[in-house]
Amino acid sequence: MTDIFVVNLEHSVERKEYISAQLDSMPVKYEMFPAVNGHESRLSILDMYDDGLSQAYRSKSLTKGQIGCYASHYLLWQKCVELNKPIIVIEDDIAIDKKRFIEFYDLVPELDSKYEFVRLSAHRRRKARLTTIETIGNLSIHRASKGHMSTMGYFLTPNGAKKFLKYSTAWYMAVDIYMDRFWIHGAEPFGLEPPCVSEDIHFESDIGYEKNASRSLSGRLRREIFNLSETTKRAVHNIKFRYYNR
Image (cartoon, rainbow, N blue to C red; front, side):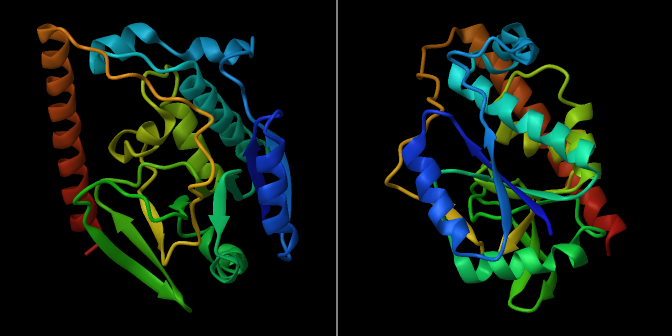
């Protein structure tokens, strides 16, 4: 059976009970994974955040909650490599479509030799082009040209985890944005259609996002140059992907 890990802060008891009630009603194996509290943790792994790079490229800092979120997923990537088997990662504030989730869960043995990383939610960047790769039963695997912008649920293999880890030596952007830099780490942006997890609006984010601080002219210029570079690299990678997968 595929291991499911639920990212949960120790003090978030209501969320733990909420997600457990959903998973307990399904024939799946899961365990709570202790999320890193960026506000309180003294783990040395948090030193991987580089505020200098964040300011240089993005002209803003990550919040402590965002850094803790990055650390939590980083540790799960390490866990995937350690187990040497595919895992499913979900966050504790999601709503699960039971039928679709079980169907995807049962498909994992068929998928793990084809896909290194599959997002399970409908979140994606604006104007992202979706290309259907294959349809299996009632579910389809697609590729989003701009990625998905969410960590609420994903499937990951050891090879995909190794790619995330290899290019994550210094953190300077939110973890979901990093995971969408497929032109850097090489884990293609595959997703599930229809999705099997979604955001539950009854819960507010535990992360906390940076405030929209004013940026200097030079800071805005650096950010625009960085964004242009990212857009160009992404476009080139997408062209190569279409060429080699015709």
